[in-house]
Image (cartoon, rainbow, N blue to C red; front, side, top):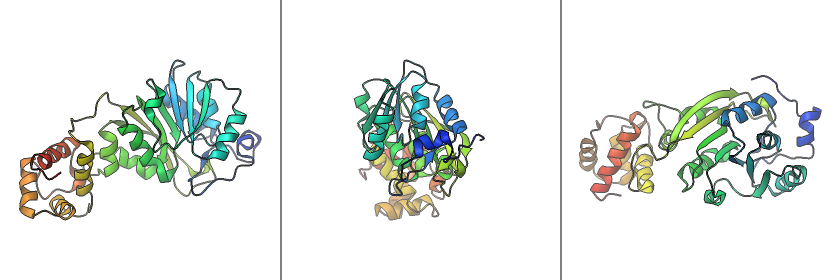
Amino acid sequence: MKGLINPSSDKASDYTRGISPSKGLGQHFLVNDGVLNKIVSAADIAKSEVIVEVGPGTGLLTKKLAKTGARIIALEIDRNLRHRLATELTHLSNVSILIADGRTWDTSSVGTSYKMVANLPYYAATNIIRHFLESTAPPTSMVVTVQREVAQSMTAQPGKMRMVSIATQLYGKPSILGYIKPGSFWPKPKVTSAIVRIQLYNHPMIDIENIHTFFEVVRGGFSNPRKQLHNALKNSFGISAAIIYYLLKKSGIDFTRRAESLTIAEWGELHRAFINEGIC
């Protein structure tokens, strides 16, 4: 992606001057104009929509989102940045800056359908994404920046699945729109990032009786991904090999397979077997 803004240039320095990025909050501000434009374009925003932005930081993305005419709700955990943004963006009547943590914020407070757009901090990215996906009031779509390896895991197919693959694809269809070089951020991170769009389903891909116990089973399967599934589950749940073999056979899953090879539908069948046997 071209169009890198040098943070010392006039355009970027208006937003980075006086800011001391917090390592604790994983702050790497996206300052590449071309990438910012691609994110806004990918969100396909209509003037009548509501956009929730997590971690507005410098406000560069916030301003571009505001230009669409949509109502922008920006969640900033850093109180200093929130005060700065509220002052500098006060002329934008369609922008609200809230002190909030994207991992715990009450999504139902939006009160209507919305989209989520964000340049996410690496350390909290998956937790923020899961919070929005699993909430009682999820967005209709999400466009986020995450670490490249996380993006690849989110979009992985059976054979290379991870916990984050299941946690994402259960609720929507993720796709990688492009990669972002470290130099597109200030300060520059050591990793490459990616833009991911998730188009959410109206309902989860499969019916699940209890989402908490479903992920207990999935987590157990991935507890030791190098081992065959039967060993990982046996060790995780502390039950006999015979019972695990029975549950896998009942679910139509070969006991020699590994967690990374299972489809979401197969995880659903295995979870149902665990429920029916009263194991979880």
